[in-house]
Each structure stands twice: as C-alpha cells, then as structure tokens.
Amino acid sequence: MSAGDASHPAKKPVLVVLHQEQSTPGRVGRLLQERGHALDIRRPRFGDPLPGTLAEHAGAAIFGGPMSANDPDAFVRTEIEWIQVPLAEKKPFLGLCLGAQMLAKCCGATVCAHPEGRAEIGYYPLLPTEAGHGFAGEIGQPWPSHVYHWHREGFTCPAGGEMLATGDDFPTQAIRVGPAAFGLQFHPEVTHAMLCRWTVRAAERLALPGAQDRVRQLEGRYMHDPQVARWLDAFLDHWLAIGA
Figure 1 (cartoon, one colour):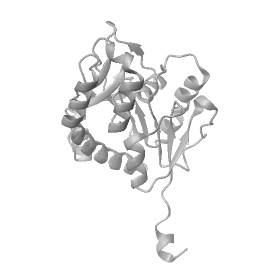
Figure 2 (cartoon, rainbow, N blue to C red):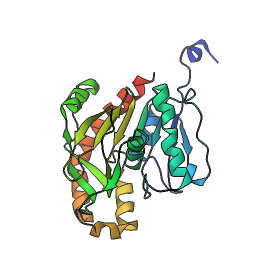
Figure 3 (cartoon, one colour):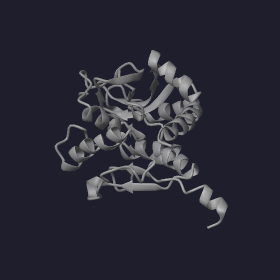
C-alpha cells in the first residue's frame, strides 16, 4: 500500500437490511456505492444475523417489504429490537417505509392501517414541517414536492422524535430520532425499473382506495423524480457525514 492509500483508508460498508429474495436497495444502494461504501446486505428473514455493534459500519438502512411491523414473525421482532443498536451508538440509521415503521415502533410509537382503509401507492404531496424546513437548510436542498409511496399502514411520531414532513392520508411522512436516525414513509430509492416491476407484479394493489393507476404513477415519476433525486443526493451526503 502506498502512502497515499494509507492516508485515505477504505470507507466502511453500509449495512443494508432487505426483506425479499429479489429485493434490491435501488437508487440508495447505487448512490452509497458511488460514494465508496460497500453494501453489507443482510436478510434476517432468511437467517442472516445482524451485528451487535455498528463499529465496523458507516451506517445502516432497513428497507421496505410487504410484511407489517406488527407481524408476530421472529425476524420482524428481531429487526425492531436491533434498531436500538444504531440509536444507542448514534450511528446513521435510515428506515424506508417498513423500515421507518420499525424505527417508530422501536421507539414506542404506533403502526396501524388507515382508519378508512386507504392506501398510498403512487406520487403524493410532501409537506415539510417547521423542523423540516430547518433540516432542508442543514442539507442545502429543499424537500421534493411529491414522493413515491407503496403502503397501506402508517405510523405516529414517537415521543422524543421530530416530525420533519407530513402528508394527507398518512400524516407522518418523515421523522428524525436523535442526531442520526431517520424514518421516511416514502420510497426515494425506487428506480424506474422498480416502479415498472412493482406495478406489474402487484397490480392488484392498484385497486385499493387511494391508489393511483400505473399510467398516473409513470407520469408522476417523469414530473417529480428529478427533484426527489436531487434531494436524496444531498440527504445521503448529510446522513453519512453524521457518522464520519
């Protein structure tokens, strides 16, 4: 190893928790790799263990899935309890959709279905709170006006957490817990290919109350995704810097 290499040690990997055999971390995974972080992908649902500390990781992210944070499965309970590790160590943690609901539940909040059975599947408005406007100043990038969703359950903001963004049918859209843990009800990681795959393989979900049809979702992506991409880029830089 040259002196130059020694002065720039390799960046630590990011722990990525996925819930299905074919799931990918999408755009978030690509952006982390572009920043020099390997992805340590674990699927506890299929027997992968989770580390007792994040000392050897730059951060951790739990992604979405069709299951509920209220399910009795052992892997669901294990993941929820494990979130105490990044919280205690103040390491960067990101929960997306199911992962955000797990973060909320770990912190004592409630995860439940919409009282009228409505879903958010497609692009919906995102409204930053006062704290959220402050966070936009922190990362130097405004929140996107619309974000992509695929869920039927929502969550409340836990005591001690900070609500960063809200919405209509599901009021809790983005939370911050402590200095480095974030939960996003939406899916900034979704790529065009993922949107196409989800709307075909789970087309029956598009009939749920509140869901958008496939054409409207594709139109929404063309209109709103450039803004989501800019926001995610700035967010990940800020998120990784917290633990640097």
